[in-house]
Picture 1 (cartoon, helix red, strand yellow):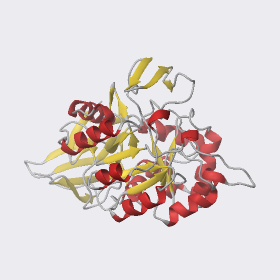
Picture 2 (cartoon, rainbow, N blue to C red):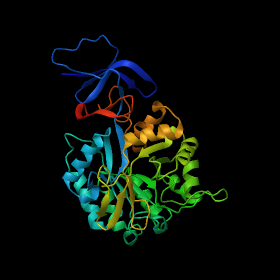
Picture 3 (cartoon, one colour):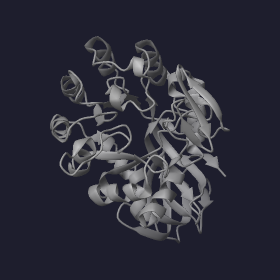
Picture 4 (tube, rainbow, N blue to C red):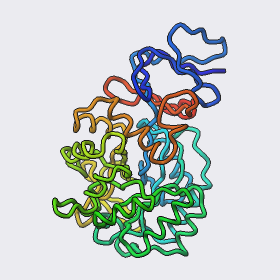
Length: 382
C-alpha cells in the first residue's frame, strides 16, 4: 500500500512545484509525480490542494516544552515534548541538556538513549549537551556553580555513547581543544557557545573541527571593529553554521538580518532553545536549581537575564520572513536542510526527494501548520 499526498505546492531542494504528488512507500518518499496518476484500490490518498508541502522542521537545540524538559530524565518528558513539537511542524530534534550535575546529565543522556521513538510525535535523533564546559563570564542562564573545566573522566563517558551528537563548549577554557579533538574523532559535532573566545580562538576551534555556533550573539563576546571577538569569528568563518533564536527578543531583527547577510542562508540554523515553559501559561519554573519566570512568553532568570525561549520553529520561520524580507523558499532551508547538513543528515532528512524519510509538514497560506507526517505517518492534524 502506498500513500499519496496530492495537489499541494511542493517545496523541492531547488524549486517549488505546483500540483505535484508525493508517493510514500515503506516510510520513504519513493517518487514525486504530476497529476493524472491512478492509485490502487488499497492506496491511501490525502488531498492537500491549496496547501504548501514542505520538509519537516529540524530543531537541533530544544531543552523542553509543555512543562517538560530533557533533564527530567523520563520517557514521558520526551514524548510530551515530541507531541508538542510535531504540532508546530517539527519532525526531528535534538533533546538538549544544559549545565547540571554529572549525575543529572548522565541520567538525561541514558533516558534519551533508552526511550523508544514516539508513535505520535517528533523523533529524537540524539542528544545536544549545552555545557557544562563554558565560560562563566558568558553563562547566561546556565548555573554558575555547575560550570566546570573539561573533565576527561566525565566526557569520555559521553563520547562512548553514540547518541551524543552535538556539544556546546567554550573553546577558550582549559583543555577544551583537546576535548574537541577527541570528540571529532568520534563523529560528535561541536558548537561554540557561552564563550568569550577571541577571534583567533574561534578560528583555532574551527581548525580543530568545530562547525557550529550556539545561539549567535547570545551568551558570547560581541564584535568590535578592532577586536572581532567571538561574534566576529563566527560571522566571518564560513566553516561555522550559526544557530540563531529568531524571536525578536534574543536578537534584534536588524542583527538577525546582518547575520544572514554575513553568513548566507546556507549557514544559518533556526533554533528555538525552548524551555519547559514553552506552550505553558506564564508563571514560575524551576529546572533543578535553574529558576526562571515566564511573563508574556518571555523567560527570565531572577536577575532579569534571558533563560531560553518559548519560541517554536513555525513562528521562527514567520519571523525570519518579516525580519529579512526574504521569501518562504529562502527561509525554509534554515529550519530544514541547513540543520540537516550541519549534522550530517542531509541524505535522509531536510529535503523532499526520492529516498528521503517521509518527514513532511503541511502549511496553509498563513504558514500555520495543518498536518505533520513522520516517516509517512500522520502524527498531527489541526
